[in-house]
Image 1 (cartoon, helix red, strand yellow):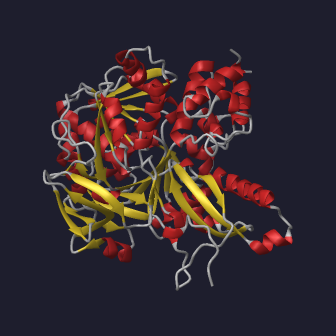
Image 2: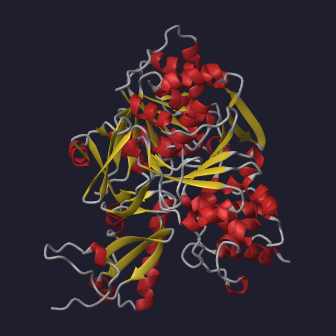
Length: 77
Length: 526
């Protein structure tokens, strides 16, 4: 499974949208119905899955799946 | 009885037990009841030595052991603690510091970026003590050096040194003295400072009839500036001899549940909903017991919840995993608990029986509360106080009833506040006033849906015509405006839904928007 597929699998745990229907412009709150806590919990799962440490202040500016993936890539780099 | 009496008794009885645990670089740190009390005493004596007896002292920061030590140092010595939400924009924090007449401030290093604005905007602030050790964010290369910034800057460590070197200790405060001012959303868009006395806090701690074994583990995940967290996680926890563990970030709530393995937790409904999503997403082949151990840490038996409505389906669902969810009801004005379900006396769907120190009455369905935990009033807001406290009865703004067995139920609201499932009370007017500043925003109403807020906007027709904007362009521009607004707001005040209206809102004969009909988008008939 690629990083993006793994990422979308985790996203799918918090919403009723299928991974194949997610695009990089999909918005967590508006399109997927994430609550603020779903989003935080999701990021915690990302940290555990990809072994990265995210800064709370930075992640709060993330709106779309594409932005979250880009942040993840930066952290892994 | 005051908070200091309760704490002194606990410190004596449980001196060798761990009072607080937290993580530092992924290692568990601990502080015993004896150590905690020694440090609280140093803060208290330091404040006295530096001339802060009886003064208002604010705290800005997220949960940490230094925050709670400072808070207890303030309130056990007769000064007044003003906990503020660190997520608020700097401008609002300046306003609250000034309106609360705060002369001292404990600030977490993580929020040191606020310092310049706070020092410049709050002339009454005589001293700012930095809490704990500097962080990478506050101390990194290029970071503003707060130590050199002003002679008004100091550290909690230095304050404690002053306390250690001083022979004099503050007297125990009187029960009727104000202990803390907690800000809560006002219906007119201006937050109100709830004054709670020493007696208010102490009586609430004692009246919540929950018993736990000393040494029970409690993981504190709520925002520490909220009355529910402050009084029930920390003060109640200490009264029981519990070990209160600090959740360092909401990102790590589930991970920290695994690390600290709590017996009991306080949560708002949104947290329960999120946990349930994780349970639902798990492989159905995993036995429930193993899954519960994985998600809850293995020891969790009870979740107390309040602050917003919880769908009873979650109570049933978590019972299947061996976790009992007990719902309660309260508000900052009541220190905060009014009623609560207890392990031995509960009814699903209700918000429990009123506490022993609470009298309830109903006026046209509205719940009225009287008792020793009811606030003294709103700080410097006599009109709002008189409106809420009438003949000693606190008008809650909630509608409800008692059943034949004495359990309380909520069935409506009178006040114009949006209650989100994270327990935050949102004043829609406060947000509408800000959104109305958008050039393309003609009329706006904010409503609460599911777990977030929706802005319903009727675009300014003149602006749209002048710029020859299509419907799509209008939506894109409004969304861009909302994204910009959201950037400066705490997550709970962000707008997550946008409805672009085709018609203006319906108005009353006095030309006020009919808020209850805000969802109707039809042409107004002549």
